[in-house]
Length: 386
Image 1: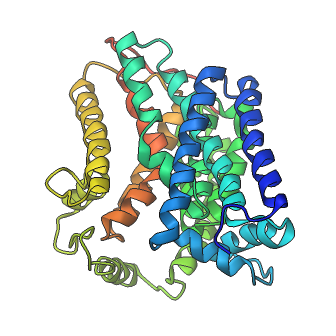
Image 2: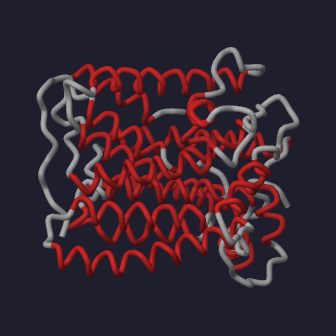
């Protein structure tokens, strides 16, 4: 059952799915404005990791195997979370008769769309930067981890697509608001708790960035509060905290989660760490002193690149200001900090962290490049969001 193709239909389907991705690479030009050459190179790069992941999953533990095998007997009882991925995969396996490899290629396109949107966002904020910065930014489009995790059957392809779309849409929310709505749905289906964080960040960004009058802000606040509360409650219920009655219950949950998945070489004990160290560990480790395999060494290179970007921008904060519009700046800040804090305090396994942080890395990277532009005395765009 776990084969790339063993019938004529599977071979024909693989051909058409792959070239559907090529069509996306050319059709996106009117939307994301990424050059055809860059779009094709990103698709081939992303597809390489898709094929590699298929091969890797055949002999190693991988969620994609379970998603596909369970989808073959799924009864289409839709719900959010893992069941949502079963539902989508069952549409492919049962509904269209797709093989394991065919389903992979479909999810590969989902992740690729997120990568295109991310590339468009990076291109937009570095348009007036020095050539050195523009060239350096290209490395982040080809981070192996982003393409590897988002190319497989599973939650990561959808959440990375969501992250890429909302990163791009926030740069021009007036015209790209449908992409924000689509991003919310794509977060909600696989990871409802992230949809809750997304909704809170969106409401807060609208409140602090808008130049509307006090009465309109009050009305927006009255609408935002119940939406945010509903988002938080939904996320807590999904995470198993539906009966939480106070901060103590949430704190106990964080402490319990910090002890999960500690066995194995990819885990560290974060329970005894200070909050700043937890945040650093989640975002920037494994580094080379943690590496115990070729894969962890490759991830260390990615994390070192991200750490260098972070440090460069930190040293320039007093001399340079972001060129983002106020909504995008506020939204990125609220979402990145919210997701980073929650995930860093509930994850001990670095292997899981590598996958999870793809949900906010596009926003963080675009935010950092919007500040590091190779000049000084830049002021933030004063565009308001109504």
